Image (cartoon, rainbow, N blue to C red; front, side):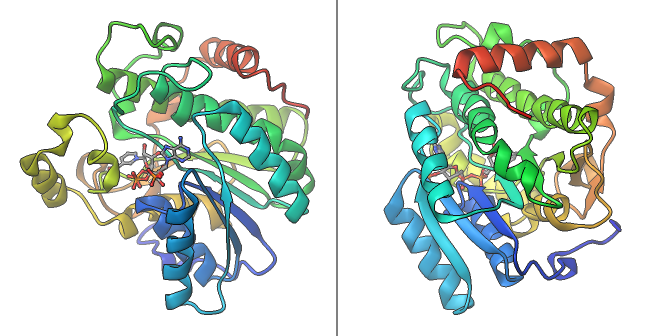
Length: 306
Ligand SMILES: NC(=O)c1ccc[n+]([C@@H]2O[C@H](COP(=O)([O-])OP(=O)(O)OC[C@H]3O[C@@H](n4cnc5c(N)ncnc54)[C@H](OP(=O)(O)O)[C@@H]3O)[C@@H](O)[C@H]2O)c1
């Protein structure tokens, strides 16, 4: 199913445990809300616990019986990612849906705690590490899914991952953001390839939300914060609620087989109903992807144990 899909089509998720990184805000919040509404146990993995608890309160005001929790996760710091994985393991025994949603766009700080270029580190390497640390739980949970967030900004670029890893790279911040998002899309495909090669029935899917005027544009450079930019984004884009649909479709629909790239079906992919897109298959370069994987294991020190 895909044409005209809305969150009303989400199945009953009773018994499913879902993590949403950055679940306190924007598209991640709307994703968490919809998963909780449909009876999943939802863990908001957030860098700011106060914001996380506020989001849980907001969800519970709408759905008083929602099964929602908050755990601390700072993707800027490998140590925090390890602590999150340990914490999660102590509290939960399965993981059905991992939504690698959190992200930054042109942030003021150029480096993560471990010295990675910040957008590459938070948007991509942090999620690479997180997924690797939870892999055994994902694999042992029947019908489990890993969802990675791409972006329209990554549709017309070539992968140049190595060049974008260091914080001293001369390219502009927007280009680094696009490369970090393309890396997330490559990761989704490579993970699916590795699952399939080992006959593991977990699946990995990439998706992009189109354009939605969320806080991500308010935290970046001054140019992104201008009122004009905000107004034009609002005019051309869709609500965060609608932008969550490609993620929710990828995370819950029975028709998804793994390896797909899902995004809005409207003009230029900015808004619309979720549909499968061909662009990632057209862009994908196999050896670049496997090299990125090897490099990511080396940089994070996290080896995937399938
Ligand atoms: N909005 C768009 O038009 C658009 C387009 C394409 C792709 N996307 C992608 O959609 C995803 C969600 O973005 P959004 O638009 O919903 O923006 P948002 O409202 O700013 O949400 C981003 C979330 O990521 C969290 N986050 C940032 N740095 C983090 C870190 N170091 N550790 C843990 N969490 C961190 C933020 O936490 P705080 O609240 O504490 O800052 C926030 O919860 C991102 O991956 C983004 O790249 C968005």
